[in-house]
Length: 293
Image (cartoon, one colour):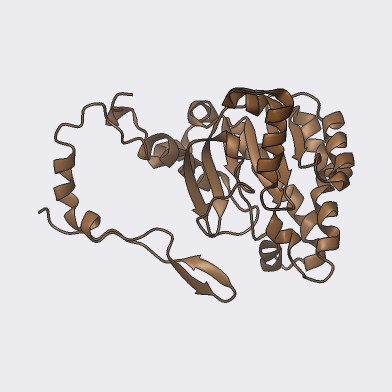
């Protein structure tokens, strides 16, 4: 890869205003989207806790539509993870599978995918019998499409690895590509973008182990399905242009660090935070600006 000319890099303002045809070529084929805080988001909107699932699905669909229209072809998102199955909130655990099956059981939630020819797949049905009817319904309702929403349900820590290894043994896969086909039934490009919420962390329950490529990760602090087009385009701009700093010829490049000495010698540690009520929140960061040398 050669150093990209700065003249070919659009400014953020230009990218935000660009037509979709100019944005789609730089969008990742596969992204991981980790959404948490859906109950928190509903509470902020004044929605009763028992209604948060039905309130959330249309908002999820609106975000997925935006991703697909901007050029993403595969969106992997965890619906349920072990922490949710471990909760003892009264009445919550009993409704988890109902929440996971909403998009399959409610025609109005599934309609956008049928209308646009997008697929929805529910992962986890092999090990969780409660999900099998929902998973089968989604395959029947959305059999074909160039865009797919992959929703995973993981009840126990380590389940993704167990399913992966079982698929490898069953298929005799000997390469990563063969293993991906064994697990997902098709070839899927590696994920190069992750958009998540809250604490900066990565786990196999959130990110499919087989699909992790050289993945840029971003964490928002707005809970639930709240990402809008401006925020997503800002992420795409950073992903496609700002983070692409590698050069073939690095002659003189290290010396340029002296112009920003304080930034490198007094820089922050990303990931530190503090308690905001019962929640974690990131500490603010800034660039220590000083004179060269």
